[in-house]
Image 1 (cartoon, helix red, strand yellow):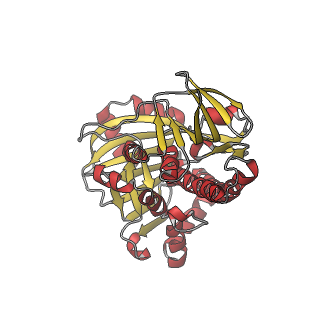
Image 2 (tube, rainbow, N blue to C red; image 1 turned 90 degrees about the horizontal axis):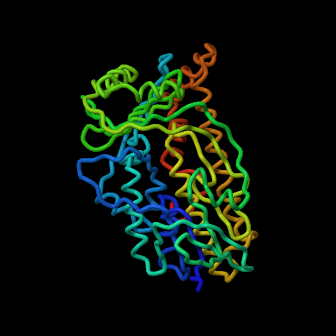
Image 3 (tube, helix red, strand yellow; image 1 turned 45 degrees about the vertical axis):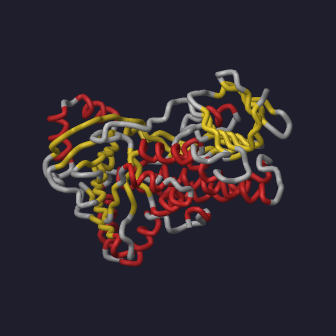
Length: 401
């Protein structure tokens, strides 16, 4: 016998769980289908390798759905300043939350903490079922519903299927939705390190010729390093022993935080820009990386996905309130129109920044250094960029406002 749902979300990551929580407590019956077993417990002294820079808009969404306190209780790090400088010149820009009248610019949070807090919150809603570890195998159109078969033999019927299953989305592929984009011929090398000097709750980013090197503040003197560089250099850096890597890292960062005194986990992943041609089809919607992948130099990927989830939830709930079909293409188009343009704008802006700072042409390098320094001295322009970085601009969903 089939289990009846209104919304089935494939993917129990940060974005899929945000959507589940945003629909929690409503009259809709929601299921989250997750292939893995969510991590909920780990040694207190350990640090997750993958972290996210959370904007105030995203924090407001997490607060509205009742998950932010769970993240605070586990561990978050706020940052109040951001220093950015160019390795090939004297261009520099400094952002300070005090200039915007805010206590912080944002927060650095381990991805596992975000997921664990959202999972715990979703589990509290009577109308949300968390199904794991299980994968979907296929689906068939059953008129006003999709019939989804899981690999444990269960069958789910739903009015709306949401792909929140990442950049290699199987839902997107099965739905026949194409993507456009390109690879950057770069890998992001990530590492958890401890530094000699305190990070001062500041995000530090140096633009090197091969890509940006960022130190993101964590608890104590720990930082998460995100180093975007050529694939062969990423391999070379990973091949170094921890002592040699620490020396190379501190040197490449101009010893801004002194010596790197400890190196924990390291890893890498390829970088590319990718965008789904369509966010929706009849009874199908995509959110997060399933819809778009972006260069991590400004840390906006997760934030865009959370805003997708909040916007889709708002669209679905308003559609349900007027007794219309939540899975009908013409109703889902409102979500696509809302988010697609804003996501494209952010993606192309980050792509332009990447290319601007990646060029070795002397006239461009000269111009960008002048531009950085000029922007640093123009308070209204700096405030505009800070507002975007904090997530305070654009057509925000109610949960993010």
